[in-house]
Image 1 (cartoon, rainbow, N blue to C red):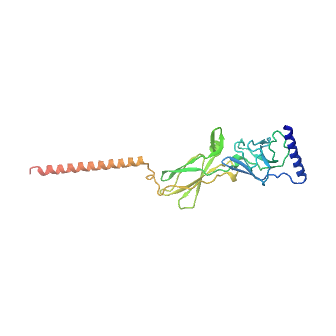
Image 2: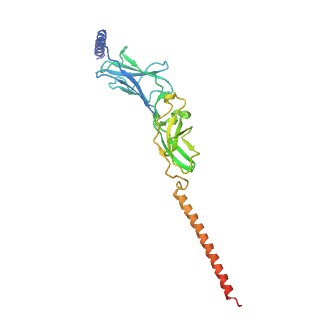
Image 3: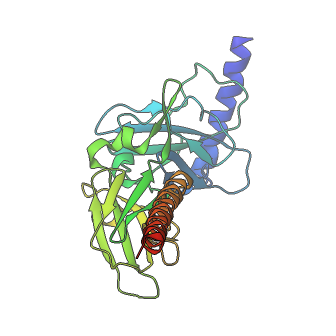
Length: 285
């Protein structure tokens, strides 16, 4: 059986050699490109309809080529390398090799079938970053608190799904852009953490906010992630409007207590005054 496989494979190789001599070589993968979002890393390419298969290998900084175990002899035109490119802060090159459609050539030397190499890609410095979610809390009439949720990445450490903060650590910062409602003039601040206080706001005015991940250690073209949706403070927001139900109960209780004291004192004063007048009118002349 093994000799039959070798004969079949030899026939395929001879056929490929003949077609190469005629100028009709196996088609190379074209338009090889990287697609990466939040450390989800996919390499894709364009192929013409055919019965050929493709094997993907990757290498970084003069290391040997490593075949992607999930992308050996595949017929589709993309390969997920999310869990294979480690460490993240390295430049990787991918090689897509075109192979004849042989059912079982395991253990046989495929030789130098045609292949296409990608441009270098560094996940740490080039993966695109999605828009972050955040909340705006009014502290007082001139301050708000912006709380940002660190995005989950596509990478895992064992069973744990890593956040962008887990991967980028102190390199991850956030850009906060804000402006007064109805005004086009914007201001930007950079926060080192996921929580930032924005101060010196005009009292009684509404403000609108957007946030984006910001990684200053990256090349300028990939420093900033996507902008979030805009969030604005409530209309006429103030300390009074931001009081919780419990605080409102406390305020009402204090007001009722003060009002009760005023009524009691007034009643006692009036009563004492009437008693004094009565005693004076009943005294003998």
